[in-house]
Structures are given as structure tokens and as C-alpha cells.
Amino acid sequence: MISNDSPAVRVALEYFHAWSGKDMDKAMTYVSDDIVCDAPAGRIEGAAAYRAFLEPFSQILTSASMLAAFGDERTALVMYDTSTVPVADAPGAELVTILDGRITQSRFLFDRAPFDAARASAD
Amino acid sequence: MISNDSPAVRVALEYFHAWSGKDMDKAMTYVSDDIVCDAPAGRIEGAAAYRAFLEPFSQILTSASMLAAFGDERTALVMYDTSTVPVADAPGAELVTILDGRITQSRFLFDRAPFDAARASAD
Figure 1: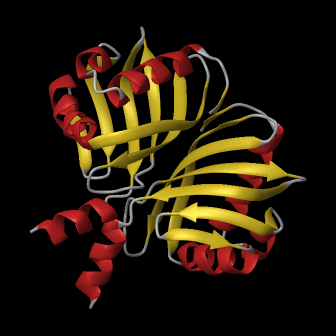
Figure 2 (figure 1 turned 180 degrees about the horizontal axis):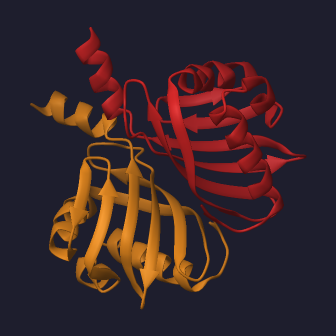
């Protein structure tokens, strides 16, 4: 992994290790109650909705590795690889704003196409 | 835009401003002849193939803005928003390795789903 050390990067990495280790309770300790996340399918508001978005993904995860994590005092930008049950190669990127140790804003980016294709072929 | 200043970030931003300004000849001056790019649809090898991948995208672009650019001596990680003719909201992220002022490796991430949907509805 390539990274720099900064307060926001540290939180982003702890959060990543929690959810990629399928410890969603711990992952949510890094997520603000009022998180606003812009994901491929649209805006997600609030911790409960965010958990409902991320938890199913963590459950189908077979591996995850951080590729790069950079940031400053308040902002972190990360890119990682994952493998999942339906999609072997599913990288993601997140741009997060951290306040008091928690993610308050997130831009969440991944390619939905292979997940859509896997779902279609399973129907 | 949120960023730190580093040699790789400087190149990544110049490259971004060139292609997002539709100056593909200038953009390609930041791309190594031997670039290896892992994009959503698979691996792209060599500058000619890379240009054939990026130029059609630059042509349908209506606006682009860099959200965040971080990096160090050799690596830059960026996330940006774009609007295109078929897809209004098409963010992208790139993790690039820079050698002698040119991108030699790239992990290129965007959501293909809305482009697939636009293509399907145009058929």
C-alpha cells in the first residue's frame, strides 16, 4: 500500500480494516450519524442507511487490499481492490471528510456493471 | 479542489487539465509509450490503445472538475466529477505511477452502469 500519514488517513484506514474484516459494528464507530454519501446509485443519508448499503457488500467480500491512501487533516482519498463472491475484481475508491474521528461526507465510487451482470446471469 | 503538492500530483493535474480541456495531443505528452492501465473493461497497454480509450470519452465531455488530488514523489491518486452527453454525473478516480513526468501505470475507476444504460436506451 502507498500512503501518507495524516489524521484523516488514519481514520480511513481503521474504517477500511474494520469493514473489510467484516466487523461492521466497529466500522460504524468511524461513521457519523449524519453521514452523507454520494454512491453510484445515488445519495445515502444517515448511518442506518449507510450500514444497509455497506453491510451486504462486506458479507459477499472474499478479500480486500488497500492500494493507496492519501490525505490531510480532514480529507482522505483511498483506492482498494476487493474480490467478492459474484465479482472477482471489484475495486473501489472513496473520498471522505473526517470530523471528530468520523466520516461525515463520502464520495463512493465503484463499477456497478459487473455486479449488474452477475445479478442478471443469476436470474 | 483538495490537494497536496507533490511531483506526481503536479503531473496528474496537468494531464487532467489537458484531457478534460479536450487537448488530447497535450494529454498524451504525460502518458508513457508503455503505459499499462487497468480500467473497468480490462487492461489497456501502450499509448495508442490508451488514447483510443480516453479520446472518445473526452469528446463526449461537457464539464469536468477535480475533487481531490493527493500523492507523493511517484504516485498520485485523484477523484473528479464529470458530466458527459449521455451521462450527467460520471465521476472517475485514477491511481497513477509517474516516471520522468509520464504516467507509466494507471488504475482507472468509473461506473460503467449509466453508460451501459444510456447505450441500451439509444439502441
